[in-house]
Amino acid sequence: MTLSTTTVIVLTANSITAVLAAGLLMLVLWQAPHRRANQLFALTMLMLGVYSGVNGFGRFVGDLDIDPEPVFILAYTLYGAFVVAIFFFASEFTQAHTTTVHFMRGAGVILLVIDSALMWSGRFATGVQPIDSHDGGYKWDMTPLGIFATFLVVIYLGATAIVLYRIEDERGRRLWVAPMLVIASALSAMLIWPVVPVPLNALFLAAAAMALGLPVLRYELFNPLADLNAQLAEKNVDLERANQLKSQFLANMSHELRTPLNSIIGYTELALNGTYGGLNDTQRDRLEKVVRNGYDLLTLINDVLDLNKIEAGQVVLERRDIATANLLNNIAATIEPLAAQKGLAIHRDYAGAPPIYADEIRIQQIMTNIASNAVKFTHEGSVTLRACRVENMVQLEVIDTGIGITPGQEDVVFAEFEQVDSSTTRQYGGTGLGMAISKKLVEMHGGRIWLESTPGQGTTFFVQLPAADPISGVVIDSPAPVAEQPG
Image 1 (cartoon, rainbow, N blue to C red):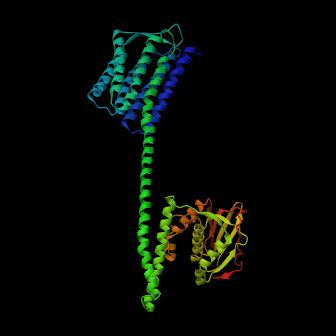
Image 2: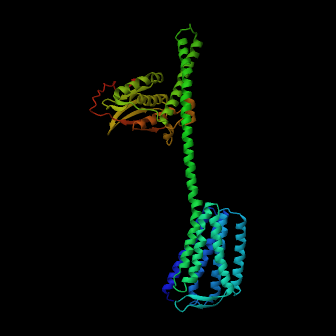
Image 3: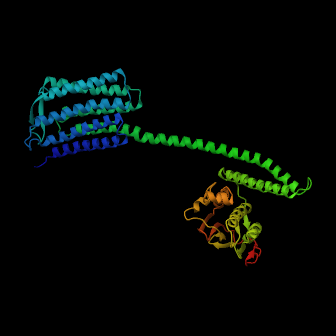
């Protein structure tokens, strides 16, 4: 069987329409298979796809010795169902339930029944015959009833376009083009095809399918995404506003809490110093606990305020060259009293370490927090302070022989208000803010902080900070002896 050029063109055009209809059917139905509008759209595309397939198959009825009349009657029945389905889908998609819509739906059902009855009873057209001018083509003579029924279909399509165009819903106005394209398809089949065998009708139907499908995809796929993005943007604004209110609240509360707390600590220390008279042992013990807990609470308030300022971008770093040895000597002096109480040795290993370019107060805060934690979580052994140059950074290390950290929990150490587990909080105290603040401050300096740990053997914290310019002229004082020193 040799295919003529016309047959190839017709098959290609109908295949494009059928594939497009099938693709839109699956895509739209996949979005919401239980939505009535989507189901009606799927039905509309199904009618169009099957019509295009039957229409293409009609090119081979002669070669297959099949009676052409039932094939073409089936094709035109499907075409009529497609026409009516357009309005049912469009009116459901736009949620239009006016009197006009109900009338149009009823008229469409009646029209489909009349056309189908005329076609299958043989009163729509007669004398289906091959066209001699090209292989595979057929023609038939339409009866007056057939011409009238065809005219009604065109009128129905025009009314569909008008009703959709006048619907207040924007989605309806986007659909009115589809029935006009179907009218163009019908006119091209009646007027152009007999003269020039070019299947413009199939291409017009493909365009109609696109005119129906794109608004559905836009409003059910892209618009929901746009709405979600808009809602997300609105939520972000709300969150930013809430964050600002939180920052303002914390700043005000921190100030309001620190003022009376400083007074409590101050007057308690005066009482301990004997300003208001002598104290017995019980009174002194209780007042010392008041002072100790007062300072703990003050530290917590300061940490919360610090974290709040960092998150609000209110912390300004005052960078300068810092002698690393002097810095670590000060850290060692700070932790020595607590280390001595626990019988821990302090090792120093930072001779010749280059200077750091950073905010001295903030670095002192970072390293004091890390070193204090090292002493707190170490029951026996030692704590080592070390420094060395790593490329253009100075690497500070705090090494302990303490309880260590469980693998996989390293990130929790740097999380806000968290410790590795709740038992740590109960046994050692603390709120988990110190390391979170340290991490943020290190990152503000352009450095990084991390740790390595083995449970039961100890932990090493690493802090890398920018090295100062070698020609800055900073003189590094000689560090304390490297030998082990008991606390």
